Image (tube, rainbow, N blue to C red; front, side, top):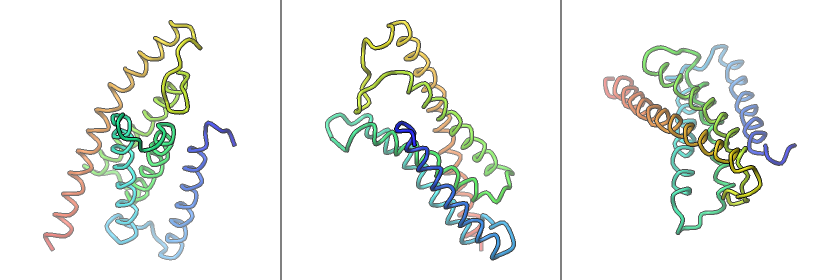
Length: 184
């Protein structure tokens, strides 16, 4: 296993385990688990909580210089892990149906995951310490400036898409609760 990709391997193995559980449910029930039933809801809820953790915890740690919650490198790995496993669970929650607001939310989820891979690639081009601080002088200054500009541009795209995703997700959750629960 490559040292720098450990979080990717752990996420991949976790998704394999989730896939195996999903497969057992499909074999037992002989159908794709509906999003509106217990297993489907469970996948959606846990996936959304992981995605919410992805969005909030890493950002809070990045902005909190006074409180030591651990190394930034750990939080970035956690961000990557939850940013892969959570959306995968939400994808399984969809029951492979992509209609209306839920479909738009799923599309935004996939866009943000792909964007995350792009950001990770750009991020790894900038040499850093174990705490995530940039190391000056190891690359030519021009290459370092270019990588910083790309990362700033990436942030300008990734963050608003993430916000749109969560607005859409909260509206979806509210609508699902209203139509599936309160109207019955």
